[in-house]
Length: 114
Image (spheres, rainbow, N blue to C red):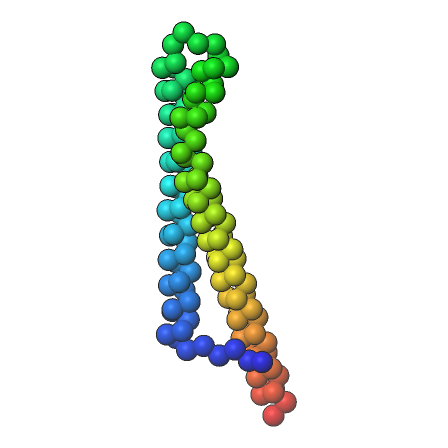
């Protein structure tokens, strides 16, 4: 099977690769932001719990940041999916380059026989 792509198809694949990379960067940034905000809210809730034991303060702080769990999980899932997509694109590009190199090698071999 020979894979032949025109310039437009190659550019479309490269643009998809760039867009996926930018989406991954944005998702990772959002993930880090959510984690930082969760830590900040935890510390804030812990410090605002006056007159309680450390364990009680920790429990209240954990409850106050529980809303971040679903958001962080969603971001992590998106990051994993985008990384898999980038890996798939990379594999397809490597396959295309290998196939094209093999075709060029065959053509060169055939022309040298003439």
